[in-house]
Image 1 (cartoon, one colour):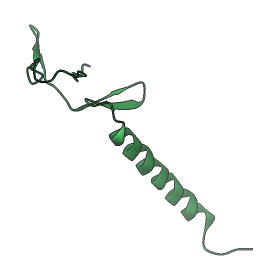
Image 2 (cartoon, rainbow, N blue to C red):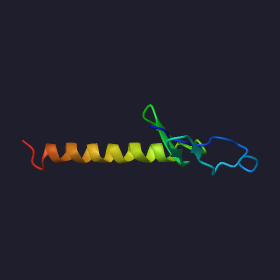
Image 3 (cartoon, rainbow, N blue to C red):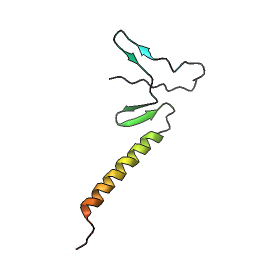
Length: 73
């Protein structure tokens, strides 16, 4: 399983749209990649990673709220 994401300051000098070709397959560039549970984008600004963590936390909070029920006592 391969993912290609370019992390560079010099986008004008380097052609980052070219895929990597091997004998068996072609690896196209992606805007994000996941490595050890962290989502990294090509600009390394972590916005998508934070958004995914917020989504997971919202789902977990909703699940816990439904388990708690609406009545007390």
